Length: 128
Image 1: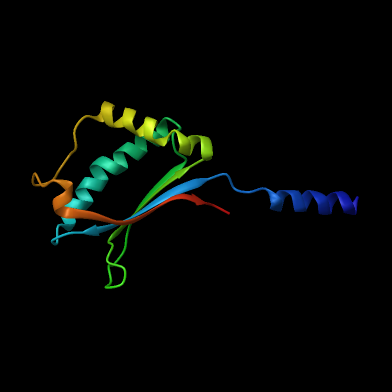
Image 2 (image 1 turned 45 degrees about the vertical axis):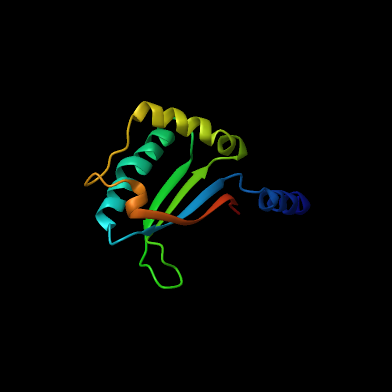
């Protein structure tokens, strides 16, 4: 009985979490904080809400931090997929959602390249 309990506990620890995330670090350019936040809340976040409803993703986070000289990004964008299959269909799924949504919503008619810059991104981030 003890051996079965130990083996059961071991197998539950041995199972790897299937989730995969993408993480992007976004710098605000030229003090355009309002434009950048508006863009991510009204475009990026709205697409993730729809993706979550349709089961295309398992979670997302739009995080804000204080930029520093060594880490000049202001926002961290995280999209989490339930597994590798969901992750593999991300481009197709988001292209469909973008098509449904229509054009970008912008504040003060500024284009994204004027107010934000993706400093770095990480794909295939595994969860443990």
